Length: 70
Image 1 (spheres, helix red, strand yellow):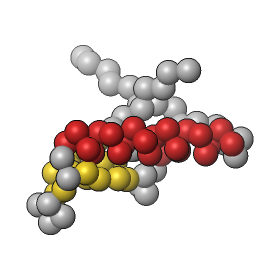
Image 2 (cartoon, rainbow, N blue to C red):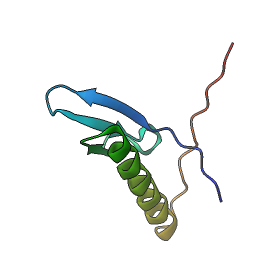
Image 3 (cartoon, rainbow, N blue to C red):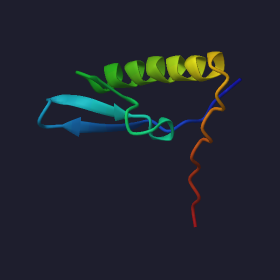
Image 4 (cartoon, helix red, strand yellow):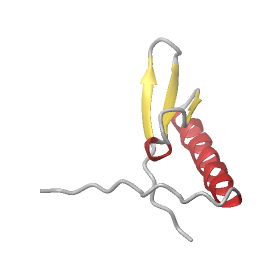
């Protein structure tokens, strides 16, 4: 099954790292990376773990956000 969840990557001057948010999974779903590529890799790993955990606990997965262009 293919999932289409958002991954928001932002540079943090304070941390000197890329900070990643997974918004559909709430305010505490974060990771980071020293490089952009590392941040993407870590985000994918966290996303897979979140999906697996939700499924194991029988919780419904959040609805993926969609972008509507006008």
